[in-house]
Structure formats: C-alpha cells, structure tokens
Length: 335
Image (tube, rainbow, N blue to C red):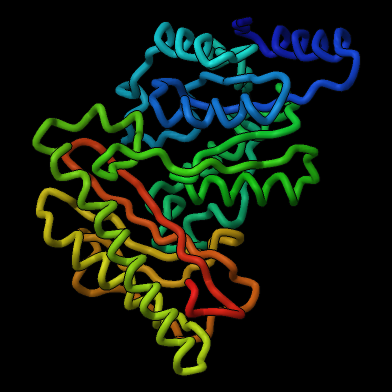
C-alpha cells in the first residue's frame, strides 16, 4: 500500500497507474477524516469491489468546522487507520500531514476559493445540517471538489448516514460536469441500531445506553409512513406534506421520551434537491411549537425518496441519523 503526503505525489501515483495499465484503470475513492471504524470498513469494501484500484483519503478538514466546533478534539488515529486500510486492500492512502498542502497560504484569506451548493445553504432547509452548522457544507463541498480533482477517480463512495452531504456531492458533480460517478453505501449500525460514527467515542457508557432511541424513533416514523401510504392507496389520493408532518410528530414524540437527548431538529427532505418537506426544531427553538408547514401540498412526481432526519446532542456528542421513505406511485399499498 502506498502512502502519499502531497498533492504532487498523489498525482504522480495516479499517472503511474495509467502508464502501467494495459487498459484504463478503474479507480475508486473513499474520502474520510480518519478515526476509521467498521462503517468506514464497509464503505471501503464496497469501493474495493467496484474498481481495480482504490484510494482512501485521510484529512481532518478544518474548513468544515465552525469556531465553536470540535476540530482540536476530533480524534486522530492515523497509525490504526493505515493498518485498517492495508488489511482492506487499499492501494493508496492520500494523507496530507499539513493543512497548507490542501489550502496553500494566501493573502486573500484562509479559504480564498470555495464551492457552495445551493442545497447546502443555511437558508435552503431550516431543519438541516446546513442550517444548524452554517458554512459547514461550503467546507465539505470545497474539500470534496479538491480531492476529486487530485485523485481523479471514476467512482466516489459516500455513506448514507450523511444524507445531505450525499445530496450536495451529487448536485455539485452534476452541475459542474465532473466526470465521476457518485455511489452511496447503506448506513452501518450496531446491533442495537446505533449508526456507527467517529463521534460515538465521545459518549459515556450511560449516554451510549440512551443512543438507540434515535434509530427507534426513526423506525417508528417509517412505520407510520407505511400506514399513511396504505391509507392513501385505499382512499385513492396522493401523499401530501401533511402526511410527512404526521411522521415528524411521531418521531419527535418518541425522542421526547429520552430526556438525555437534546434534539436539534427532526426533518424531512427529498434526497435529490433537499427541499424542506417538514421540520420540527429542537428544544432551544421550541420542540413543542413545531414549524411543520408553510402550506399543505401534494408530493410531486419528481420526489422519489425522502430522507427522514434527526440531529441531537447526547452529552458532548452531536449525533445525526436518517432513514429513507420511498414515495410510491403506481402501487402505494406496497410501500
């Protein structure tokens, strides 16, 4: 396994693959901030199976951390990460050891050139990562764009747990005519349903015991959605925003039963444009006074799938999770 630290070395290795191949190599990339866990391993295995050569990037991207966020606290476990990558058959790890390698110094500011995607803006969806972490997705889109240019993969793999990130990357690739396929791998969970995350290590044993409530609430929402789909099929009507709002209320009610959770938002968004289909804001903004609808409307034919999302604080860990709600058309009763 090759480990490279500079953009130039990464590009040179990429060119070596082209020069030595009897036919064009198929290259996949998995982009990470390190602190790899079983969820990353699953993603890396999917990427490994999809291509002849696999790159993994390890870079804690400062551009996506806000002033009060946990950049210094974020776990750095490079030795363990490199061992894991080697065991999983990774061909090359790009692990810049200086921020300046990715963001060269400039008199124009720390981040003189950035990428912003509309569906990541704070104003686009009030119950989203973009709204609760202003500037976050500018940092994400910028570093993903840079890494795609550096590695030049054919396929880039992302995890479904970061649903809005997946939406933003797909939109950026489409809108900027980038020649890479974006693929999404399912969320990997513990046996009790907790989504794997590098930030789970911040949880105390008592907090970890409370964490399954998030997925339990989301699953309860899925069950209500299935019931609403069946009712719509029976009544011969289309699904509406108000149907999603019933789901949101069920999820919020279930989360309220766990006092250790400080809910940031419960929301619904279509996976292609991240349009706001309903939001309940958290305790600081009044969980009992939900912002549910601007107007009731039928869910249009263009919406094929909705992400049902939760963000919450549990102790010192900020946790996110989501499940998908299919929007049936021809046979709603089968949803």
